Amino acid sequence: MTDTKHFLKDFGVIALSILIAAGLVYSGAIESLLTSTHGLRLFGSFFAGLFFTSIFTTAPAIAALGTIAQNGSVLETAVVGAFGAVIGDMVIFLLVRDRLSEHLMEHMKHNQGWARFTLMMRSRSFRWLSFFIGGLIIASPFPDEIGISLLGFTKLRTYWFFPLSYAFNFIGILAIGAAAQAIA
Image (cartoon, rainbow, N blue to C red; front, side, top):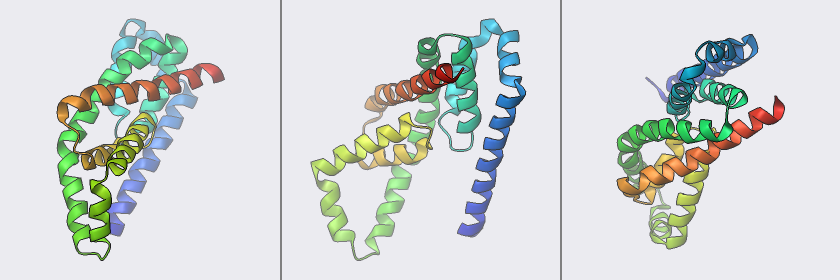
């Protein structure tokens, strides 16, 4: 498949995901599901957190997390949802971390700016900046794949990834829950 076909396919899936999320919110389907399964709210938070990480499922997950937070505790939703998000991020981290970073490095070797880029990558400020921006992307509704790839540039160890992913996702889900309660 060409890059254009991949892009169009991915764009279509993302657009469909957003439409489904909007439909679920406006129809009240998420709210009625959550009220009928009130005891499973924690499971719903975990499951929605798991899907909060991927570009293809983030829109419905945000809708679900917002609805769960409106009908319960924002803090509880963020605590449990972040655990689900860490599981999703860990899968992406283990699959994407080195492969995407190495692919980008290989691509850069064939360009003129490679020498400058390698010097910049070795600097501490670049690593901290990559770490900070990667964390912000993980906390935001943007696709975690990009943030995880940036963390791959920093050569972050797997045992540090878990607490950092949890903290960033907790902040992001907490912000979603607070915004959902504010507009309710």
